[in-house]
View 1 (cartoon, chains in turn yellow, brown):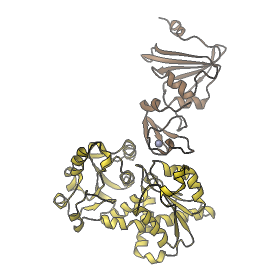
View 2 (cartoon, rainbow over the protein chains, first blue to last red):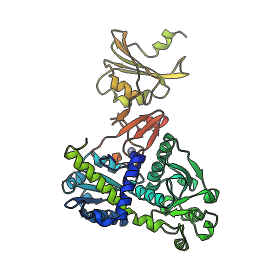
View 3 (spheres, helix red, strand yellow):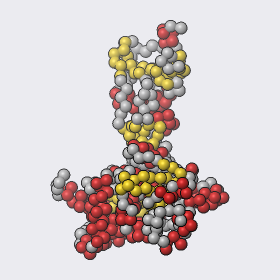
View 4 (cartoon, each protein chain N blue to C red):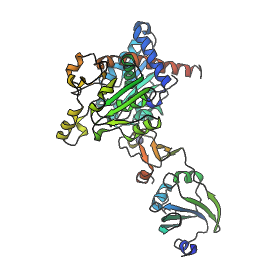
Length: 312
Length: 156
Ligand SMILES: [Zn+2]
């Protein structure tokens, strides 16, 4: 993978994705062998929005590579509260770390940040935009369980504001995958994602009911529909109820169906599903560590070759 | 009505630029896009809803003593791909500018996505890639269709 930063899944080719997943698989097979890889290097965690698991996952990944992390802490206590621009914050923090991870509530924030820093920067979520490392771990989980060729994937829930969905849908166009999108009409894919799908030649198959496609699916990717997306409570309750699954619903699915969810879930997937062989969402969450280890290792490796005048 | 009669609706200029065959309703947007508001003292004539053979009705803009550069002309293509631009010296057309669609437009439009980083207090100008039928924000990926571009002009 020859990338300086990871900002959007749209920047990744199939070869890029496979390189990361292959390395993640190597790490998974023998984690101990990677312990000293990034000794002496520091990863800066810049989270301008609350996140527990993504932050912990990056933290663990860097430490398992033998590196260290620094954390700017919560936004409330930082200089951001005092009105400092993101550009200034990133320029300062760049001096403390060998690579940066950024989560920010505004779309395009990570892209902008790359214009102010030279160290590798990873987008850990920019508003309703992109969340490419989630996508990489999603793809890793999918490859392990269902494969990435000749596979039918259903993506369900909030497709409009769900950044994990936006990243995943565009990344899947690199593979031989049929995508079905299941959502209420008000939460269908936004224009920009639709545009990317059309550009890549992918067909956008949309449904308002899961039942229409469930029997065909190899993978069902469920996302949360948030209350705040609806003007009133009743409308939310009416709609959200139709995009929740339990073991009864899954009777209609293939035995081999893989059910995924970026977590945290609320009530989209009934707890009884956890006990079935379909449930892969906890495995998916655990995959965040080897995948982020692989990605950080590769970006830091690229940064090294760049400064030592390596292969470019 | 002869061509001359039609032209009389907007007086001839001696030196400057004539932007013709604008879709009706675009004249003021074109001036806004070019940052022309008369404060520079230049003479500006505007014809709106002028009968035209090519378009049912057209707008026309004449700016005196100012010759548009190619890059200004390129920016125009975003809202007025059909426009023709003539540079006038001593009442004669000395140059007909061709409108080329640029690959990108920087700083001219604001991003319609309120949640885009370019709308925050950050030291960054907007930049849009030019698509076949619209524009796309380089930062958040938002797409602005051609017919929506004029609403998002951000010129002072
Ligand atoms: Zn934008």
